[in-house]
Amino acid sequence: MIEKIFALPVLEQVTATISRRQLGELDILVVNHPAVKASVALQGAHLLSWQPAGEKEVLWLSEASLFEHGQAIRGGVPICWPWFGPAKDSSLPSHGFARNLDWQLSAHNEDNNGVVLTFELKSSDASRKYWPHDFTLYARFKLGATCEMELESHGEFETQSALHTYFTVGDISAVSVSGLGHRFIDKVKGGVEDQLSDGIQTFPDRVDRVYLEAEACSVIHDKSLPRRIDVVHHHNCNVVAWNPGPALSVSMSDVPDDGYKTFVCVEAVNATIPQKVTASQPGRLACVLSVSK
Image (cartoon, rainbow, N blue to C red; front, top):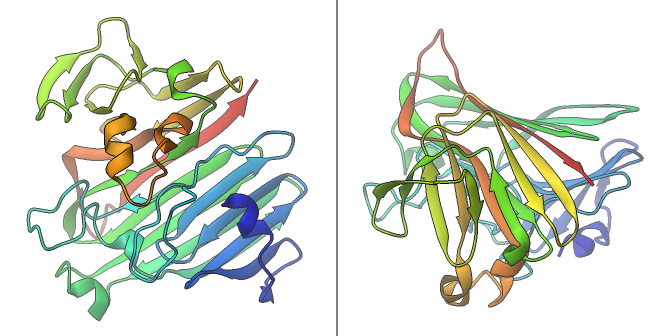
């Protein structure tokens, strides 16, 4: 899917290294820079891919993902906001509405090190169908040898949020994650609290855990590719580790039946303690990704 994005015809050359293209019904910004290749869908300000020069693609994007208006994209970095997981009202979309609405590219910059993109989403008639509050939301991506992502919200409200990052791995059976801490809520087992005894999360089957005291840096150890990915979290109270496992993967229409083998999610999240946003205190959530052999 990511190769397909870079082969799409250019509709607009925004700068020397940024172009606008279209996949399905959605506009895509493609970054083709000597230091980095990346792509972002304007729907959801959704980072689809990030590949620093000399490295393999870091993010995972489902071959079965839909690129249709209002439909969530499976893979990359969905922005979950202003709630995480199912809404209290079952008629509302899971993980909020920010990932399903069109954002505006409000600023961009590039230099020898890479590209910076800033996207903006404001309250509108479309957002008020889901949530009554006035807001301005920014998503910033600094793309180069590292990937710096920041979500910033302005208004008067409480929110949950997540940078729901899907990472490409060689084989989930050869993946472990450290730096998650010990205490977690196990969503596979109905929300019971448990502890990780050795501090190493593996993925023998479905895993869906909300870690309560994660370290500042979670590390994905991938023996199969081989490489390690460092995920440094900022302004978060939780880190989520997720892989659907074989049974759930088969039931998901936008994931190949064996798709679970090739990705893992390690996410900066504010779920168990909502952020209080005021006029003097914006809400923030950020993480920095880096990859090494």
